[in-house]
Length: 109
Image 1 (cartoon, helix red, strand yellow):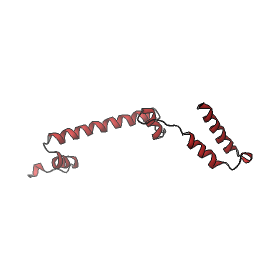
Image 2 (cartoon, rainbow, N blue to C red):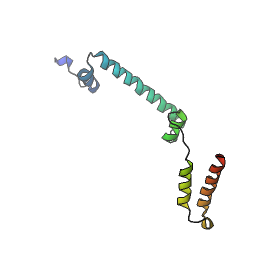
Image 3 (cartoon, rainbow, N blue to C red):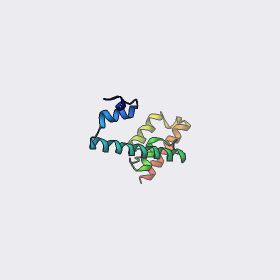
């Protein structure tokens, strides 16, 4: 390597070491560059629209990447049973859980 071939540019050093003239690696680098640009644009758009506070799971549901599955009957029943000792001593929170459970039962009718 001659004096004029030397560089202190880290990106160029890595490109010379790993990519060189390999067309497959060059294409891979370009694909990843485009992916990074798209990710940056999505982030900027979410930021500008004020959507950065939305939980990730909710964003995945909105995007259609995952299916939003409401709690099943057995999950709601288990939650209700775990939160109450007897009907006569229901707290306000337990009463709300019961109301939620009853509403769930009405929806399935």
